[in-house]
Image (cartoon, rainbow over all chains, first blue to last red; front, top):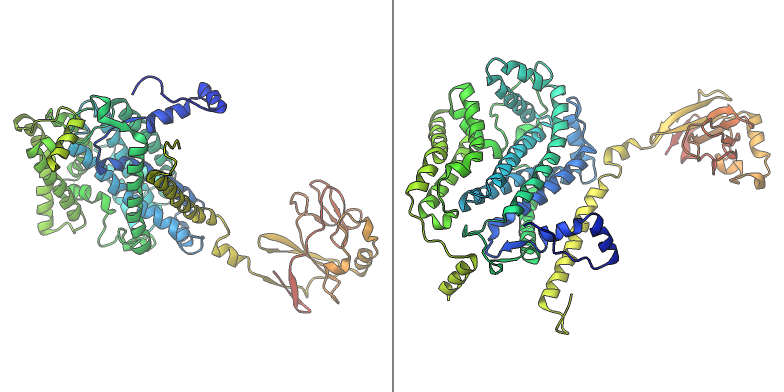
Length: 411
Length: 174
Protein backbone atom coordinates (compact mmCIF):
# COMPACT_ATOMS: atom_id res chain seq x y z
CA UNK A 1 0.00 0.00 0.00
CA UNK A 2 1.62 3.22 -1.11
CA UNK A 3 0.43 6.71 -1.82
CA UNK A 4 -1.93 8.87 0.18
CA UNK A 5 -4.89 7.64 2.13
CA UNK A 6 -8.31 7.76 0.52
CA UNK A 7 -9.73 9.13 3.76
CA UNK A 8 -11.96 12.16 3.25
CA UNK A 9 -12.46 14.16 6.45
CA UNK A 10 -16.00 15.45 6.81
CA UNK A 11 -15.99 17.80 9.77
CA UNK A 12 -14.11 21.10 9.90
CA UNK A 13 -12.13 19.87 12.91
CA UNK A 14 -11.00 16.70 11.13
CA UNK A 15 -9.98 18.67 8.04
CA UNK A 16 -7.88 20.93 10.30
CA UNK A 17 -6.33 17.93 12.05
CA UNK A 18 -5.62 15.93 8.88
CA UNK A 19 -3.59 18.74 7.42
CA UNK A 20 -1.35 18.82 10.50
CA UNK A 21 -1.14 15.18 11.67
CA UNK A 22 -2.88 12.75 9.33
CA UNK A 23 -3.31 10.02 11.91
CA UNK A 24 -6.98 9.46 11.09
CA UNK A 25 -6.05 8.93 7.47
CA UNK A 26 -3.35 6.45 8.49
CA UNK A 27 -5.76 4.45 10.66
CA UNK A 28 -8.36 4.60 7.87
CA UNK A 29 -6.08 3.29 5.17
CA UNK A 30 -4.49 0.67 7.44
CA UNK A 31 -7.52 -0.79 9.15
CA UNK A 32 -10.69 0.43 7.45
CA UNK A 33 -10.24 0.66 3.69
CA UNK A 34 -7.20 -1.69 3.61
CA UNK A 35 -7.71 -4.28 0.85
CA UNK A 36 -7.79 -7.70 2.45
CA UNK A 37 -7.84 -10.98 0.50
CA UNK A 38 -11.41 -12.16 0.58
CA UNK A 39 -10.54 -15.82 1.20
CA UNK A 40 -8.75 -15.47 4.56
CA UNK A 41 -9.74 -18.20 7.01
CA UNK A 42 -9.78 -18.14 10.80
CA UNK A 43 -6.07 -19.00 11.03
CA UNK A 44 -5.51 -15.37 9.97
CA UNK A 45 -7.16 -13.94 13.07
CA UNK A 46 -4.32 -14.71 15.46
CA UNK A 47 -2.30 -11.61 14.63
CA UNK A 48 -5.16 -9.50 15.94
CA UNK A 49 -5.51 -11.79 18.93
CA UNK A 50 -1.80 -11.35 19.70
CA UNK A 51 -2.11 -7.56 19.57
CA UNK A 52 -5.09 -7.69 21.89
CA UNK A 53 -3.23 -9.97 24.34
CA UNK A 54 -0.18 -7.68 24.30
CA UNK A 55 -2.43 -4.82 25.37
CA UNK A 56 -4.09 -6.97 28.03
CA UNK A 57 -0.75 -8.10 29.45
CA UNK A 58 0.56 -4.53 29.57
CA UNK A 59 -2.56 -3.27 31.35
CA UNK A 60 -2.74 -6.11 33.88
CA UNK A 61 1.03 -5.94 34.35
CA UNK A 62 1.07 -2.20 35.08
CA UNK A 63 -1.77 -2.67 37.56
CA UNK A 64 0.08 -5.55 39.27
CA UNK A 65 3.17 -3.38 39.65
CA UNK A 66 1.07 -0.95 41.73
CA UNK A 67 1.05 -3.66 44.43
CA UNK A 68 4.22 -5.73 43.81
CA UNK A 69 7.52 -5.27 45.64
CA UNK A 70 10.58 -6.24 43.51
CA UNK A 71 12.86 -7.18 46.41
CA UNK A 72 13.94 -10.71 47.27
CA UNK A 73 12.77 -10.29 50.88
CA UNK A 74 9.30 -9.07 49.95
CA UNK A 75 8.43 -10.25 46.44
CA UNK A 76 6.76 -13.55 47.36
CA UNK A 77 4.71 -11.93 50.13
CA UNK A 78 3.70 -9.04 47.89
CA UNK A 79 2.28 -11.50 45.36
CA UNK A 80 0.31 -13.20 48.13
CA UNK A 81 -0.81 -9.72 49.25
CA UNK A 82 -2.12 -9.17 45.72
CA UNK A 83 -3.94 -12.50 45.78
CA UNK A 84 -5.51 -12.00 49.23
CA UNK A 85 -5.77 -8.31 50.07
CA UNK A 86 -5.93 -6.25 46.90
CA UNK A 87 -9.43 -5.71 45.52
CA UNK A 88 -9.76 -8.16 42.57
CA UNK A 89 -6.02 -8.80 42.93
CA UNK A 90 -6.55 -12.54 42.43
CA UNK A 91 -8.35 -11.83 39.14
CA UNK A 92 -5.71 -9.47 37.79
CA UNK A 93 -2.89 -11.85 38.75
CA UNK A 94 -4.55 -14.87 37.16
CA UNK A 95 -5.40 -12.84 34.03
CA UNK A 96 -1.72 -11.93 33.74
CA UNK A 97 -0.30 -15.41 34.35
CA UNK A 98 -2.84 -17.24 32.21
CA UNK A 99 -2.74 -14.43 29.67
CA UNK A 100 0.95 -15.16 29.24
CA UNK A 101 0.17 -18.83 28.48
CA UNK A 102 -2.55 -17.83 26.03
CA UNK A 103 -0.10 -15.38 24.44
CA UNK A 104 2.14 -18.36 23.62
CA UNK A 105 -0.78 -20.52 22.43
CA UNK A 106 -1.67 -17.74 20.00
CA UNK A 107 1.90 -17.16 18.85
CA UNK A 108 2.47 -20.86 18.13
CA UNK A 109 -0.74 -21.05 16.09
CA UNK A 110 0.29 -17.84 14.30
CA UNK A 111 3.74 -19.24 13.50
CA UNK A 112 2.42 -22.63 12.34
CA UNK A 113 -0.04 -20.80 10.09
CA UNK A 114 2.93 -18.98 8.55
CA UNK A 115 4.80 -22.23 8.02
CA UNK A 116 1.81 -24.00 6.45
CA UNK A 117 0.83 -21.27 4.00
CA UNK A 118 4.37 -20.15 3.11
CA UNK A 119 3.81 -16.67 4.54
CA UNK A 120 7.57 -16.39 5.06
CA UNK A 121 8.37 -16.61 1.34
CA UNK A 122 9.32 -13.77 -0.98
CA UNK A 123 8.47 -10.84 -0.53
CA UNK A 124 7.64 -11.48 3.14
CA UNK A 125 11.08 -12.52 4.41
CA UNK A 126 11.59 -9.41 6.57
CA UNK A 127 8.06 -9.71 7.93
CA UNK A 128 8.88 -13.28 9.00
CA UNK A 129 12.24 -12.33 10.53
CA UNK A 130 10.59 -9.51 12.51
CA UNK A 131 8.23 -12.20 13.74
CA UNK A 132 11.14 -14.37 14.88
CA UNK A 133 12.54 -11.35 16.72
CA UNK A 134 9.14 -10.81 18.35
CA UNK A 135 9.07 -14.46 19.40
CA UNK A 136 12.52 -14.17 20.99
CA UNK A 137 11.45 -11.00 22.83
CA UNK A 138 8.34 -12.82 24.04
CA UNK A 139 10.43 -15.70 25.37
CA UNK A 140 12.72 -13.31 27.21
CA UNK A 141 9.77 -11.38 28.65
CA UNK A 142 8.05 -14.59 29.77
CA UNK A 143 11.20 -15.89 31.44
CA UNK A 144 11.82 -12.60 33.27
CA UNK A 145 8.22 -12.36 34.42
CA UNK A 146 8.22 -15.89 35.80
CA UNK A 147 11.11 -15.07 38.12
CA UNK A 148 9.25 -12.19 39.77
CA UNK A 149 7.07 -14.13 42.26
CA UNK A 150 10.38 -15.45 43.67
CA UNK A 151 9.07 -18.93 44.28
CA UNK A 152 11.18 -22.08 44.06
CA UNK A 153 10.68 -22.40 40.30
CA UNK A 154 11.32 -18.67 39.81
CA UNK A 155 14.65 -18.86 41.63
CA UNK A 156 15.88 -22.12 40.17
CA UNK A 157 14.65 -21.34 36.66
CA UNK A 158 16.64 -18.11 36.88
CA UNK A 159 19.69 -20.04 38.05
CA UNK A 160 19.47 -22.60 35.24
CA UNK A 161 18.81 -20.13 32.43
CA UNK A 162 21.52 -17.68 33.51
CA UNK A 163 23.92 -20.62 33.82
CA UNK A 164 23.48 -21.24 30.07
CA UNK A 165 25.92 -18.42 29.50
CA UNK A 166 28.66 -20.16 31.50
CA UNK A 167 28.91 -22.48 28.49
CA UNK A 168 30.54 -19.66 26.53
CA UNK A 169 34.28 -20.40 26.40
CA UNK A 170 36.69 -18.08 28.26
CA UNK A 171 34.23 -15.28 29.16
CA UNK A 172 31.30 -17.45 30.25
CA UNK A 173 31.74 -17.15 34.02
CA UNK A 174 32.23 -13.38 33.85
CA UNK A 175 29.08 -13.02 31.78
CA UNK A 176 27.11 -15.00 34.32
CA UNK A 177 28.43 -12.94 37.24
CA UNK A 178 27.54 -9.82 35.27
CA UNK A 179 24.00 -11.07 34.72
CA UNK A 180 23.58 -12.02 38.34
CA UNK A 181 25.03 -8.84 39.82
CA UNK A 182 26.50 -11.09 42.49
CA UNK A 183 27.99 -14.52 43.18
CA UNK A 184 24.65 -16.28 42.78
CA UNK A 185 21.09 -15.44 41.81
CA UNK A 186 19.91 -12.99 44.46
CA UNK A 187 18.22 -9.65 45.03
CA UNK A 188 20.29 -7.71 42.44
CA UNK A 189 19.19 -10.30 39.88
CA UNK A 190 15.52 -10.00 40.79
CA UNK A 191 15.54 -6.22 40.69
CA UNK A 192 17.13 -6.00 37.26
CA UNK A 193 14.85 -8.76 35.92
CA UNK A 194 11.91 -6.68 37.12
CA UNK A 195 13.16 -3.62 35.29
CA UNK A 196 13.72 -5.56 32.06
CA UNK A 197 10.36 -7.34 32.32
CA UNK A 198 8.69 -3.91 32.45
CA UNK A 199 10.77 -2.66 29.52
CA UNK A 200 10.54 -5.50 27.00
CA UNK A 201 6.77 -5.41 26.33
CA UNK A 202 7.19 -1.87 25.05
CA UNK A 203 10.08 -3.02 22.84
CA UNK A 204 7.71 -5.74 21.62
CA UNK A 205 5.08 -3.08 20.90
CA UNK A 206 7.60 -1.14 18.83
CA UNK A 207 8.63 -4.21 16.82
CA UNK A 208 4.93 -5.04 16.33
CA UNK A 209 4.58 -1.65 14.63
CA UNK A 210 7.42 -2.62 12.29
CA UNK A 211 5.85 -6.05 11.78
CA UNK A 212 2.47 -4.57 10.77
CA UNK A 213 4.18 -1.95 8.60
CA UNK A 214 6.15 -4.69 6.80
CA UNK A 215 2.90 -6.59 6.36
CA UNK A 216 1.00 -3.67 4.91
CA UNK A 217 3.74 -2.86 2.41
CA UNK A 218 3.64 -6.33 0.81
CA UNK A 219 0.02 -7.18 1.61
CA UNK A 220 -1.29 -10.25 3.36
CA UNK A 221 -0.79 -13.80 2.19
CA UNK A 222 -3.89 -15.95 1.72
CA UNK A 223 -4.75 -19.67 1.74
CA UNK A 224 -4.04 -20.09 -2.00
CA UNK A 225 -0.67 -18.36 -1.86
CA UNK A 226 -1.65 -16.49 -5.03
CA UNK A 227 -1.31 -12.72 -4.67
CA UNK A 228 -4.44 -10.57 -5.20
CA UNK A 229 -4.61 -9.53 -8.85
CA UNK A 230 -7.73 -7.38 -9.12
CA UNK A 231 -10.14 -5.60 -6.82
CA UNK A 232 -12.39 -8.66 -7.02
CA UNK A 233 -9.84 -10.58 -4.97
CA UNK A 234 -10.06 -8.29 -1.95
CA UNK A 235 -12.56 -6.73 0.43
CA UNK A 236 -12.26 -3.77 2.75
CA UNK A 237 -10.66 -4.64 6.10
CA UNK A 238 -13.58 -3.04 7.94
CA UNK A 239 -16.13 -4.55 8.45
CA UNK A 240 -15.08 -7.99 7.20
CA UNK A 241 -11.72 -8.66 8.80
CA UNK A 242 -12.52 -6.42 11.77
CA UNK A 243 -15.57 -8.45 12.71
CA UNK A 244 -13.89 -11.80 11.98
CA UNK A 245 -10.93 -10.81 14.18
CA UNK A 246 -13.26 -9.46 16.86
CA UNK A 247 -15.30 -12.66 16.90
CA UNK A 248 -12.21 -14.83 17.31
CA UNK A 249 -10.88 -12.51 20.04
CA UNK A 250 -14.08 -13.14 21.97
CA UNK A 251 -13.81 -16.92 21.47
CA UNK A 252 -10.19 -16.79 22.56
CA UNK A 253 -11.16 -14.79 25.63
CA UNK A 254 -13.64 -17.54 26.52
CA UNK A 255 -10.74 -20.01 26.60
CA UNK A 256 -8.66 -17.60 28.67
CA UNK A 257 -11.58 -17.05 31.03
CA UNK A 258 -12.01 -20.81 31.37
CA UNK A 259 -8.49 -21.11 32.71
CA UNK A 260 -8.70 -17.95 34.85
CA UNK A 261 -11.93 -18.88 36.61
CA UNK A 262 -11.92 -22.70 36.66
CA UNK A 263 -8.31 -23.89 36.53
CA UNK A 264 -6.05 -20.89 37.12
CA UNK A 265 -3.03 -22.89 38.33
CA UNK A 266 -3.29 -25.82 35.91
CA UNK A 267 -0.63 -24.52 33.53
CA UNK A 268 1.67 -23.46 36.35
CA UNK A 269 3.85 -25.44 38.74
CA UNK A 270 2.90 -26.04 42.36
CA UNK A 271 6.51 -25.56 43.49
CA UNK A 272 6.27 -21.88 42.68
CA UNK A 273 4.00 -21.47 45.69
CA UNK A 274 7.02 -22.34 47.86
CA UNK A 275 9.18 -19.30 48.70
CA UNK A 276 12.58 -19.41 46.98
CA UNK A 277 15.14 -21.46 48.93
CA UNK A 278 18.72 -21.14 47.65
CA UNK A 279 19.72 -24.27 49.58
CA UNK A 280 17.24 -26.71 48.02
CA UNK A 281 16.72 -27.41 44.30
CA UNK A 282 13.25 -28.79 43.47
CA UNK A 283 13.30 -32.44 42.48
CA UNK A 284 11.47 -31.96 39.22
CA UNK A 285 12.65 -28.68 37.77
CA UNK A 286 10.83 -27.62 34.61
CA UNK A 287 10.20 -24.34 32.81
CA UNK A 288 6.71 -23.22 31.86
CA UNK A 289 5.00 -25.35 29.22
CA UNK A 290 5.78 -22.99 26.33
CA UNK A 291 9.53 -23.60 26.70
CA UNK A 292 9.31 -27.38 27.05
CA UNK A 293 10.19 -28.33 23.43
CA UNK A 294 13.41 -26.30 23.63
CA UNK A 295 14.13 -27.70 27.08
CA UNK A 296 13.90 -31.19 25.60
CA UNK A 297 16.33 -30.26 22.83
CA UNK A 298 18.76 -28.78 25.38
CA UNK A 299 18.76 -31.91 27.52
CA UNK A 300 18.99 -34.26 24.52
CA UNK A 301 22.54 -33.11 23.69
CA UNK A 302 25.05 -34.63 26.16
CA UNK A 303 27.58 -31.78 25.79
CA UNK A 304 26.99 -28.56 27.77
CA UNK A 305 28.03 -26.04 25.11
CA UNK A 306 26.48 -27.97 22.22
CA UNK A 307 23.24 -28.30 24.15
CA UNK A 308 23.01 -24.54 24.59
CA UNK A 309 23.92 -23.98 20.94
CA UNK A 310 21.25 -26.49 19.88
CA UNK A 311 18.67 -24.69 22.02
CA UNK A 312 19.34 -21.27 20.60
CA UNK A 313 19.87 -22.79 17.15
CA UNK A 314 16.46 -24.43 17.19
CA UNK A 315 14.89 -20.96 17.41
CA UNK A 316 17.44 -19.12 15.29
CA UNK A 317 16.96 -21.53 12.41
CA UNK A 318 13.47 -20.14 11.95
CA UNK A 319 14.98 -16.92 10.65
CA UNK A 320 16.48 -18.82 7.71
CA UNK A 321 13.22 -20.53 6.76
CA UNK A 322 12.57 -18.32 3.69
CA UNK A 323 15.85 -19.59 2.17
CA UNK A 324 15.78 -23.18 3.43
CA UNK A 325 12.43 -23.82 1.77
CA UNK A 326 13.24 -23.93 -1.92
CA UNK A 327 9.71 -24.44 -3.24
CA UNK A 328 8.26 -21.80 -5.54
CA UNK A 329 4.76 -22.67 -4.35
CA UNK A 330 3.65 -20.95 -1.15
CA UNK A 331 0.60 -22.70 0.27
CA UNK A 332 0.66 -26.27 1.58
CA UNK A 333 -2.85 -26.60 0.10
CA UNK A 334 -1.08 -27.11 -3.24
CA UNK A 335 1.92 -29.05 -1.88
CA UNK A 336 0.59 -32.50 -0.97
CA UNK A 337 3.97 -33.94 0.09
CA UNK A 338 5.05 -30.90 2.12
CA UNK A 339 1.69 -30.88 3.82
CA UNK A 340 2.35 -34.33 5.29
CA UNK A 341 5.81 -33.32 6.48
CA UNK A 342 4.31 -30.20 8.01
CA UNK A 343 1.96 -32.20 10.20
CA UNK A 344 4.77 -34.57 11.14
CA UNK A 345 6.76 -31.50 12.17
CA UNK A 346 3.86 -30.28 14.32
CA UNK A 347 3.70 -33.73 15.95
CA UNK A 348 7.46 -33.64 16.55
CA UNK A 349 7.14 -30.25 18.27
CA UNK A 350 4.32 -31.53 20.46
CA UNK A 351 6.36 -34.66 21.20
CA UNK A 352 9.38 -32.58 22.20
CA UNK A 353 7.12 -30.52 24.42
CA UNK A 354 5.80 -33.62 26.15
CA UNK A 355 9.31 -35.00 26.60
CA UNK A 356 10.49 -31.68 28.04
CA UNK A 357 8.17 -32.25 30.96
CA UNK A 358 9.49 -35.73 31.68
CA UNK A 359 12.58 -36.57 33.74
CA UNK A 360 15.76 -36.84 31.66
CA UNK A 361 16.12 -40.61 32.02
CA UNK A 362 16.06 -43.81 29.99
CA UNK A 363 13.68 -44.01 27.05
CA UNK A 364 12.75 -40.35 27.33
CA UNK A 365 16.30 -39.30 26.51
CA UNK A 366 16.47 -41.62 23.49
CA UNK A 367 13.16 -40.31 22.20
CA UNK A 368 14.24 -36.72 22.73
CA UNK A 369 17.42 -37.31 20.75
CA UNK A 370 15.50 -38.84 17.86
CA UNK A 371 12.99 -36.00 17.76
CA UNK A 372 15.72 -33.36 18.11
CA UNK A 373 17.52 -34.88 15.14
CA UNK A 374 14.27 -34.88 13.16
CA UNK A 375 13.56 -31.26 14.14
CA UNK A 376 16.80 -30.06 12.58
CA UNK A 377 16.50 -32.49 9.67
CA UNK A 378 13.16 -30.91 8.80
CA UNK A 379 14.86 -27.58 8.23
CA UNK A 380 18.22 -28.65 6.85
CA UNK A 381 17.28 -31.68 4.75
CA UNK A 382 13.55 -32.08 4.17
CA UNK A 383 12.62 -28.51 3.26
CA UNK A 384 15.39 -27.88 0.71
CA UNK A 385 14.95 -31.29 -0.95
CA UNK A 386 11.16 -31.07 -1.08
CA UNK A 387 11.31 -27.82 -2.98
CA UNK A 388 13.33 -29.51 -5.71
CA UNK A 389 11.55 -32.87 -6.03
CA UNK A 390 7.94 -32.20 -5.08
CA UNK A 391 5.21 -32.25 -7.70
CA UNK A 392 2.84 -29.47 -6.69
CA UNK A 393 -0.82 -29.15 -7.60
CA UNK A 394 -1.77 -26.52 -10.18
CA UNK A 395 -2.43 -23.12 -8.63
CA UNK A 396 -5.67 -21.23 -9.28
CA UNK A 397 -5.33 -18.20 -11.56
CA UNK A 398 -6.63 -15.89 -8.87
CA UNK A 399 -8.23 -15.79 -5.44
CA UNK A 400 -11.73 -15.14 -6.75
CA UNK A 401 -11.32 -17.98 -9.22
CA UNK A 402 -10.43 -20.36 -6.39
CA UNK A 403 -13.52 -19.29 -4.41
CA UNK A 404 -15.82 -19.67 -7.42
CA UNK A 405 -14.34 -23.07 -8.15
CA UNK A 406 -14.96 -24.32 -4.64
CA UNK A 407 -18.54 -23.01 -4.54
CA UNK A 408 -19.20 -24.64 -7.91
CA UNK A 409 -17.79 -27.91 -6.58
CA UNK A 410 -20.16 -27.72 -3.62
CA UNK A 411 -22.98 -26.95 -6.06
CA UNK B 1 -26.06 4.57 8.71
CA UNK B 2 -27.52 5.42 5.30
CA UNK B 3 -30.67 3.36 4.95
CA UNK B 4 -32.16 3.08 1.55
CA UNK B 5 -35.00 1.04 3.01
CA UNK B 6 -37.14 2.63 5.71
CA UNK B 7 -36.93 -0.52 7.88
CA UNK B 8 -33.81 -1.15 10.03
CA UNK B 9 -31.96 -4.14 8.64
CA UNK B 10 -30.67 -7.30 10.27
CA UNK B 11 -27.18 -5.81 10.05
CA UNK B 12 -28.30 -2.72 11.97
CA UNK B 13 -29.67 -4.96 14.70
CA UNK B 14 -26.45 -6.94 14.85
CA UNK B 15 -24.30 -3.83 15.03
CA UNK B 16 -26.37 -2.32 17.83
CA UNK B 17 -26.64 -5.57 19.77
CA UNK B 18 -22.89 -6.23 19.48
CA UNK B 19 -22.15 -2.67 20.53
CA UNK B 20 -24.41 -2.96 23.57
CA UNK B 21 -22.88 -6.25 24.71
CA UNK B 22 -19.43 -4.79 24.03
CA UNK B 23 -20.25 -1.79 26.24
CA UNK B 24 -21.36 -4.09 29.06
CA UNK B 25 -18.16 -6.10 28.61
CA UNK B 26 -16.04 -2.95 28.71
CA UNK B 27 -17.70 -1.90 31.96
CA UNK B 28 -17.16 -5.38 33.41
CA UNK B 29 -13.45 -5.10 32.58
CA UNK B 30 -13.21 -1.56 33.95
CA UNK B 31 -14.69 -2.38 37.37
CA UNK B 32 -11.84 -4.57 38.71
CA UNK B 33 -9.15 -2.37 37.14
CA UNK B 34 -10.50 0.73 38.87
CA UNK B 35 -11.47 -1.02 42.11
CA UNK B 36 -7.99 -2.42 42.68
CA UNK B 37 -6.69 1.09 43.39
CA UNK B 38 -9.04 1.51 46.36
CA UNK B 39 -7.60 0.59 49.79
CA UNK B 40 -6.97 -3.15 50.00
CA UNK B 41 -7.97 -5.46 52.85
CA UNK B 42 -4.63 -5.17 54.67
CA UNK B 43 -4.71 -1.36 54.54
CA UNK B 44 -8.29 -1.35 55.81
CA UNK B 45 -7.30 -3.74 58.61
CA UNK B 46 -4.37 -1.51 59.53
CA UNK B 47 -6.82 1.38 59.82
CA UNK B 48 -8.73 -0.25 62.67
CA UNK B 49 -9.32 1.81 65.87
CA UNK B 50 -6.30 2.30 68.18
CA UNK B 51 -6.39 2.33 71.99
CA UNK B 52 -4.25 4.90 73.79
CA UNK B 53 -3.31 5.10 77.49
CA UNK B 54 -3.70 8.73 78.55
CA UNK B 55 -3.11 8.40 82.32
CA UNK B 56 0.55 9.44 82.05
CA UNK B 57 -0.04 12.66 80.09
CA UNK B 58 0.70 15.63 82.36
CA UNK B 59 -1.45 18.74 82.41
CA UNK B 60 -0.34 21.06 79.59
CA UNK B 61 1.30 18.21 77.69
CA UNK B 62 0.41 17.28 74.11
CA UNK B 63 1.24 13.83 72.69
CA UNK B 64 1.04 12.59 69.11
CA UNK B 65 -0.23 9.16 68.03
CA UNK B 66 -1.05 7.78 64.57
CA UNK B 67 -4.38 6.52 63.36
CA UNK B 68 -4.97 5.66 59.66
CA UNK B 69 -1.64 7.23 58.85
CA UNK B 70 -2.70 10.59 60.27
CA UNK B 71 -1.14 12.33 63.31
CA UNK B 72 -3.60 12.71 66.22
CA UNK B 73 -2.95 15.33 68.94
CA UNK B 74 -4.01 14.30 72.46
CA UNK B 75 -3.83 17.44 74.58
CA UNK B 76 -4.28 17.42 78.41
CA UNK B 77 -5.58 21.00 78.59
CA UNK B 78 -4.93 23.32 81.61
CA UNK B 79 -7.84 25.16 83.30
CA UNK B 80 -6.64 28.39 81.68
CA UNK B 81 -6.74 26.82 78.20
CA UNK B 82 -10.27 25.51 78.79
CA UNK B 83 -11.48 28.93 80.00
CA UNK B 84 -10.01 30.70 76.96
CA UNK B 85 -11.57 28.13 74.66
CA UNK B 86 -15.03 28.80 76.12
CA UNK B 87 -14.90 32.61 76.36
CA UNK B 88 -15.30 33.33 72.70
CA UNK B 89 -17.76 35.32 70.61
CA UNK B 90 -18.78 32.54 68.19
CA UNK B 91 -19.83 35.03 65.53
CA UNK B 92 -16.24 36.23 65.24
CA UNK B 93 -14.94 32.78 64.35
CA UNK B 94 -14.22 31.95 60.67
CA UNK B 95 -15.65 28.44 61.35
CA UNK B 96 -18.04 28.91 64.29
CA UNK B 97 -18.21 25.99 66.70
CA UNK B 98 -18.54 26.02 70.52
CA UNK B 99 -15.79 24.26 72.48
CA UNK B 100 -18.42 21.98 74.04
CA UNK B 101 -19.05 20.47 70.58
CA UNK B 102 -15.38 19.57 70.29
CA UNK B 103 -14.88 17.62 73.57
CA UNK B 104 -16.72 14.91 75.51
CA UNK B 105 -19.00 16.03 78.35
CA UNK B 106 -17.28 15.90 81.73
CA UNK B 107 -13.90 15.34 80.07
CA UNK B 108 -13.20 18.84 78.79
CA UNK B 109 -9.52 18.61 79.72
CA UNK B 110 -8.99 15.99 77.07
CA UNK B 111 -8.67 17.35 73.56
CA UNK B 112 -8.35 14.89 70.66
CA UNK B 113 -7.71 16.46 67.26
CA UNK B 114 -6.48 15.40 63.82
CA UNK B 115 -3.14 17.24 63.68
CA UNK B 116 -3.30 18.21 60.01
CA UNK B 117 -3.72 21.85 59.02
CA UNK B 118 -6.94 22.22 57.02
CA UNK B 119 -5.15 24.48 54.54
CA UNK B 120 -2.71 22.25 52.69
CA UNK B 121 -1.83 19.48 55.13
CA UNK B 122 1.20 20.45 57.22
CA UNK B 123 1.38 19.48 60.94
CA UNK B 124 0.79 22.56 63.17
CA UNK B 125 3.03 23.29 66.17
CA UNK B 126 1.45 23.15 69.64
CA UNK B 127 1.48 25.91 72.28
CA UNK B 128 2.28 28.52 69.66
CA UNK B 129 0.60 31.46 67.98
CA UNK B 130 -1.40 34.37 69.22
CA UNK B 131 -3.84 32.24 71.29
CA UNK B 132 -1.20 29.80 72.60
CA UNK B 133 -3.11 27.10 70.71
CA UNK B 134 -1.65 25.76 67.48
CA UNK B 135 0.33 27.52 64.74
CA UNK B 136 1.04 26.17 61.27
CA UNK B 137 4.48 27.34 60.08
CA UNK B 138 3.84 26.56 56.39
CA UNK B 139 1.49 29.44 55.60
CA UNK B 140 0.77 31.04 58.99
CA UNK B 141 -2.64 29.61 60.03
CA UNK B 142 -3.41 30.30 63.72
CA UNK B 143 -5.63 27.97 65.81
CA UNK B 144 -6.89 28.58 69.39
CA UNK B 145 -6.87 26.29 72.44
CA UNK B 146 -9.95 24.55 71.07
CA UNK B 147 -8.20 23.88 67.78
CA UNK B 148 -10.45 26.32 65.92
CA UNK B 149 -9.07 28.42 63.07
CA UNK B 150 -8.72 32.07 63.98
CA UNK B 151 -6.60 33.63 61.25
CA UNK B 152 -4.61 32.60 58.22
CA UNK B 153 -5.53 30.74 55.03
CA UNK B 154 -6.94 27.54 56.62
CA UNK B 155 -10.69 27.33 55.92
CA UNK B 156 -11.91 25.18 58.83
CA UNK B 157 -11.17 24.03 62.38
CA UNK B 158 -8.83 21.14 63.15
CA UNK B 159 -11.10 18.08 62.79
CA UNK B 160 -12.10 15.96 65.78
CA UNK B 161 -11.72 12.23 64.98
CA UNK B 162 -14.26 9.71 66.28
CA UNK B 163 -13.17 8.60 69.78
CA UNK B 164 -14.59 7.30 73.04
CA UNK B 165 -13.44 6.79 76.62
CA UNK B 166 -12.96 3.15 77.55
CA UNK B 167 -12.03 4.28 81.08
CA UNK B 168 -10.73 7.44 82.74
CA UNK B 169 -7.23 6.60 81.52
CA UNK B 170 -7.85 4.96 78.14
CA UNK B 171 -9.43 6.17 74.94
CA UNK B 172 -10.14 4.40 71.66
CA UNK B 173 -9.66 6.50 68.53
CA UNK B 174 -11.50 5.44 65.36
